[in-house]
Length: 102
Image (cartoon, rainbow, N blue to C red; front, top):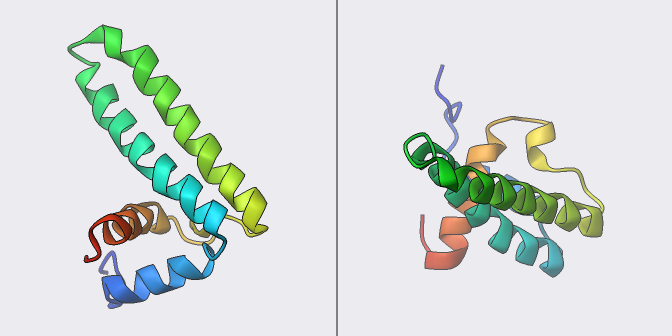
């Protein structure tokens, strides 16, 4: 069974975008998604550099607060509530939004 279930990244991102129409929600995700990704990388680096853990945790929590704030504004639940794979689609959406391509 494929992670994408035979659907293209474009299909997944198009569905993701349906739950992210509000410009404020898009802004909170544009800021929050990279915060979460950087926090995860910092958390891994924190295994050898323990001083990073508080920063990683703070960044991780703030990134998620922004995500849920955006969804409260949008009035729609996060897509990953219906399918966990949207946790990864969000990062691809962010890359597409920033670079203009997948």
